[in-house]
Length: 321
Image (cartoon, rainbow, N blue to C red; front, side):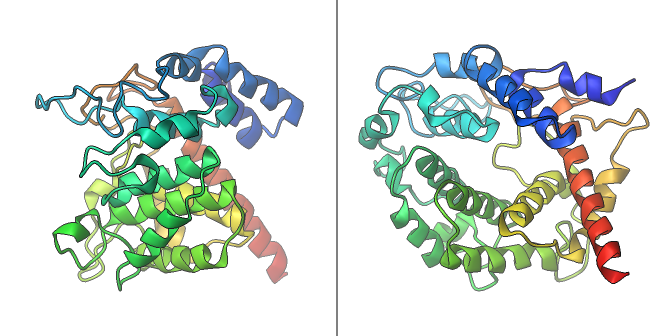
């Protein structure tokens, strides 16, 4: 089986990234594919569900009329929908005109707080920070929030509001992803870079997979699933470090080596990575393979990480000659 052909036989949201990042095709090729996102496929479908008030289903993190039913977190409201479109690379102008201004009147389900100011959850605030920067909102207030809530060990924890004093893998990675996305959509920022360095070190000290106090491997870090949503996984963490290294124009820490090796060990004999599980909860539509089946998104991300790491190793060998 030709894995490249398999990956190219996909929705434009994935295909343009395969063309750019794995195949190094000319910009006019992958940019043309990228433009197709607003006309067909996943992104076009998700854009079609935006309502005239700028929201998806009238709610911030939950649909307006949501009632818990035991089936898990719904991913159909405004925040998750914006995040998915941004992560796929959809241009802001593809949304309804003045979406950013329309959403200024939206309120969080938690304490009726204003949408672009964020709330108390690190993971929610991380995607809100990134989405606001993407849509051109001044998110300085939320950047300040991340600085004020960074814990002494360098990371963040969504349970800080309940008294947590140590960081979590999940919250820390989400904070890092949000801050990096903010910088990409605005400009490099020394204050944010210092925050990211501290949080990155939190994960590096644990080699992305281990408990710091005992050295115990945390098996849940090796569970792979796409869409990533808010959960931590080795592949998502490695993809952050890949993206951060490109943005910062820096070489990665060698502490990533064990996680790179672990990711390779999860590759199936057919050369692909498989969907381990799927978060329960309502979605507009499925974008990847069922559990137990080969995942195009995971395979693409894993191959892109491997390509980056091989280039890093090559650079290191050349510089030591």
